[in-house]
Length: 561
Ligand SMILES: *[C@@H]1O[C@H](CO)[C@@H](O)[C@H](O)[C@H]1NC(C)=O
Ligand SMILES: *[C@@H]1O[C@H](CO)[C@@H](O)[C@H](O)[C@H]1NC(C)=O
Ligand SMILES: *[C@@H]1O[C@H](CO)[C@@H](O)[C@H](O)[C@H]1NC(C)=O
Ligand SMILES: *[C@@H]1O[C@H](CO)[C@@H](O)[C@H](O)[C@H]1NC(C)=O
Ligand SMILES: *[C@@H]1O[C@H](CO)[C@@H](O)[C@H](O)[C@H]1NC(C)=O
Ligand SMILES: [Zn+2]
Image (tube, rainbow, N blue to C red; front, side):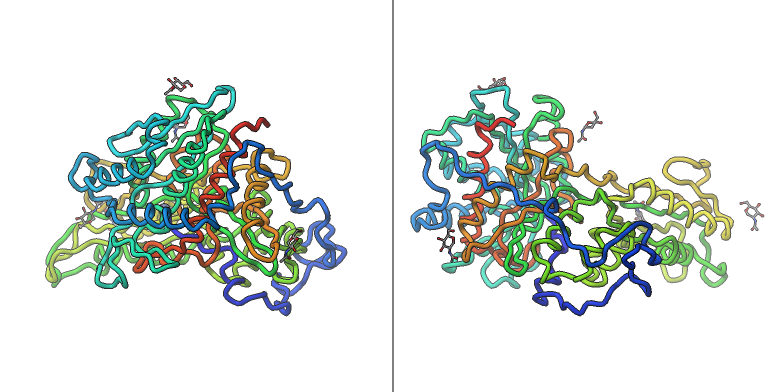
C-alpha cells in the first residue's frame, strides 16, 4: 500500500479548521439568487444539508449464532498475548519483494516458503478446513466452501510481501525482529500489511474454533508482490478466480488501504477506498546524431529532452475537479452535515454549486496541497538518462514521466497531451516524431519517440456508496457496530468512501465484483512509518481489526440482499 494523503490530514493537524476561512471562490461569492459569477443555478448560501444528506446506516447487530462477542478480541489479555506472538512471528520473516526479480522460483523468494510454514503452524484449523492452493508458486488462495452456493462468495485480501530495508542500522529495533514493547509491535510489515493478513486469518481461525461452518463461501487471496506491481501474485490470483467463478461473482472484496478511521471533532470517519486513480508512465526517447563536443549544435539531445520536460511542466496543466461522480463528494457532504463546526463554513454551499473545479481548488487551498492530488492528475519526471562522455555529444537520451490519473480524466488524455506538447518541439529541431506506435518511420536517427513505459491503468471503477446500496450499507452498519462499541465516549462512526492516489492489488480484481473496499480498519495514530524506518503498529489496532473482520464475516455469512 502506498499511503494516501489523508482527506483529513490538515484538519487533524490543526484541530478544527478556523471558522474564519475566507470564501474561496474568487472575488464574487455565489449570491442567494445564484447570480454570482460561478452560479448558474439557484444556490442558497445559508442553506444546510437536509435529512436526506448522509443518513447514518442502521447498526448491524451480531447474528444469533452463539459465538462470542468480538469485544473479546479487544479485552481478553490471553488473546492479546497470542496475537502479539502471531504477528511478531510473521514480521520476523523477511518476505520482501522487488521489481528486479521476475521469477517466482528464484532463491530471492525463498522467505515466502518460511512464511507459509509459519502460517500453517499459526492457523491449524484453517489449514485443515480450507482448501489451500498456491498460485504461481507463492500466491496463497484459501477457500472454505459455504453450504449455500446461491450466495456469492466473500473475498478477503492482503499481501504477504513487504518493502525492502534500506539501512537496518537506522532502525531502533532490527527491522525483522518483531520487537514488542508492551504497546507497539515494531518491524517491517507490522502495519503494511501483515497486520491485515494476520487479522483476517485470526478472525477465520477463531470462527472455525467455535464450530463455524460457512453458509456463504469464504475466499482468502494473498499476493506476494504488491509492493512491486503485483502482477506475479494478485495478477495470477485474480485470473485464477475469474476462471473459476466468472465475472461479477463475488459479494464483496476487502483489501488493505483507504484512510482507516479518522477523528473529526466529536465524530469518527471510517474511510474505505472505493476507487483508485489511474496510472501511466510515459517514456520519451531521443536518437540524434553525435559528434565532438567542440563543434556542438545549439541544442544537444540533452537540451532537447530538457526542453520537452520544461514544457510538460508548464503547458496544458492538469486541474483538479470534484465531479458529481467523485466519491469524496459524499464524504464532504457528511462532514458538512455531521461535523459542520470542524470544516470550512462554505463547504456545503460549495458542494451545492456546479463549479466542480472551483470546489476542488478551494479544498486544495484550504486543506493543503496534498489534498489536491485526490482530485487532480499528477505528473512527475522521475528518470532521465543520456550522455556517456564529457567530450562526446549524447546520441541516445531518454526520460520517464509518471502520471497518476484523476477520476475525471483517462490515460488517453495524458497521451494526447504529450503528443500536443512534443510535436512542435520536434518540428522546431527538425526531428521526426512517433507516438505510441504510430508515426514510426523505421529511421531511428534524429527521431523522438514517446511510448507507454509500463502497463497503463485507467482510474478504477467506483464501488457503490449510495445509502440505497444494500451491500455498502451493511458493511457500513458493521463498521459502526464494531467501532462504536470500541471507541470511548459513544462516538458516532460515519462511513464514507474516498479514492486512493496509489494502487493496491485490487487493480487486478475489478472484474470480480463492483463492491471493492480498500479498507485497513485502523484508527488514526495506531500505525506509524509505513514504507520507512521504524515501521510499527499499536497492538490495540490489530485487535480491533480482528474484531472488524470477525463481525464482517458473520454479518454477511447468511445474509441475503
Ligand atoms: C467447493 O465448491 C465448488 C463448487 O462451487 C466445487 O467445485 C469444489 O470442488 C468444492 N471444493 C471443496 C473442497 O469441496
Ligand atoms: C535510456 O537511456 C539509457 C542511456 O542511453 C539506456 O541505457 C537505457 O536503456 C534507455 N532506456 C530505455 C528504456 O530505452
Ligand atoms: C531537416 O532534415 C532534413 C532531412 O533529415 C533535411 O533535408 C532538411 O534540410 C532539414 N531542414 C532543416 C531546416 O534543417
Ligand atoms: C454510552 O451510551 C450508553 C448507552 O446509550 C450509556 O449507557 C453510556 O452511559 C454512554 N457512555 C458515555 C461515556 O457517554
Ligand atoms: C476483465 O475483463 C475484461 C473483459 O473481458 C478482460 O479484457 C480483462 O483482461 C479482464 N481482467 C482484468 C484484470 O481486467
Ligand atoms: Zn500494503
